[in-house]
Image (cartoon, rainbow, N blue to C red; front, side):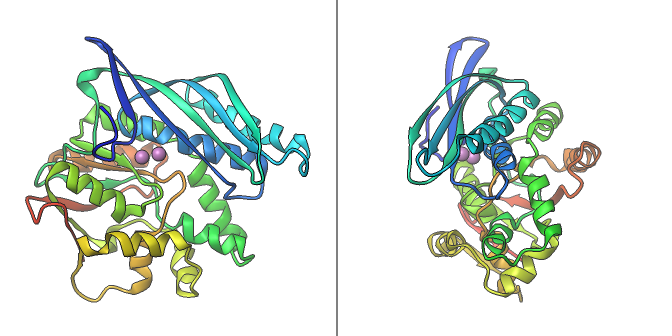
Length: 306
Ligand code: CO
Ligand code: CO
């Protein structure tokens, strides 16, 4: 299974009962504290494995570091932060590679295990399914406010808590209860990744914007124009496939397009199981997880936002 349908990770079957699931992700810092950045980058890298229903096994560090300008202790803190998440995931670090780089970058290549018959793709959503989002949106907007020195301490603490949270228990709950499709929300924002799922699954979606969990401060910052460039490019690239019904604030739409770092899972599952999963997610620490919409037979590959 490769990348033709925008799958989150590649899957390679080794035997009847065992397949490898592999992914890689790295980026430049989104927060100031090195240890926290390491945690965010690692949690983000695991997400593609969790979205597919896999269990991370081994990790390799990927590092770009400005060795002439920055003290090596900064890199040590980043790697320690990453390692704390590798341990929490129950995986092991088996090596890595670093290069001298103008700009700091860190992330992981992750290899996980999965049963070949139990791979959760983004292509299995069915009409009448409910759509569940496990983390609030707005990390891109709040990180932009942080870079501009305009974010409140509170807002930064909340996105940090969210971005460092592994999608491990949502993935395990999803597997236990049973889902039809899943993907993680990252750079393309909620609507971009939902559109990928709609296209891969040959279905349409209705998203109820009033049900989508958001970080409280995101609306205020977006209203002041603190919107990352990625939000605009997501909207320009994908909005021809989205129909907005009724009076929706442009700020709220910006948040639906906002690129997320280490975002939550978008899970599509039959309606009779949806409430059960939301309840269990709430009990496992995903306090804002919510049903945000449903799958419809058509128009195929399009989303109605209301
Ligand atoms: Co992904
Ligand atoms: Co990814």
